[in-house]
Length: 298
Image (cartoon, rainbow, N blue to C red; front, side):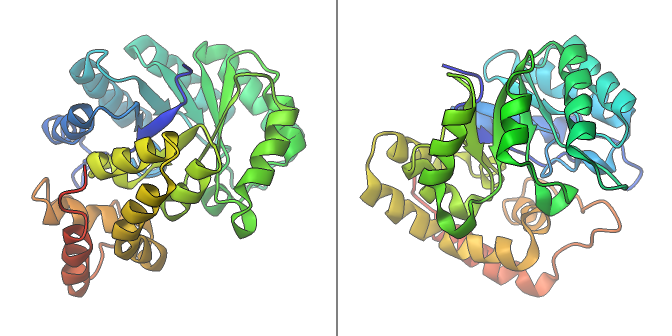
């Protein structure tokens, strides 16, 4: 099975106000994912705050994670950066540290053209020499991949998967069918946007790139395995238990909510990187109630 299948869990990257990576805290996060037996760890994705970290901070996070995981779970490392040479260096750093795969978003300030994105991906894929997943996240990058561009990128050496945003109007089956027609056999198609995971998995996507699995991997894995087994009623039951949390994600952004979840679970009291502000303390009760509905789901 491809590296990019099943449940990929994305933890926060714990740093202090000076940007120092707290290795012991990161290892606690990773232990939850390892114990739950998620299919992969997505390090330094959007949930991992990659855009707010320097190359040195990212190197440290990868080193700590890869050493601690010790091959028990594949580690996919986000290597997005504004400049191609910087993303190339990050890809090489990840490979040298022992990462299993790469995740690349086309970060930009000046809006990018399709040709610029193609050349960016070609350079990073060649330098990293690891299986690479296209990160289609227009909500943060403001760049939307056309299906034709995904098809073109899928022909590049090492490009093995795509991480898609929520499908328009929930039309996952049609989007999956089109993309599978356009991409090589074995090319993995997955989705992010946790509140759409149930529909995407039931439609037959290969991967759920999950924010909440960074801290609650067990119920996220239960939902994933139920979908893989075709147990639609069980998927809907678990997704219903997640519903209060999805509403918080949609209202406040999953990144902010995850920091409060970490606090409620007594994993850490780290705060988001400024200028991102923490969730108001008035929302703590809603987060606690949302987590309570998930108790016992394994």
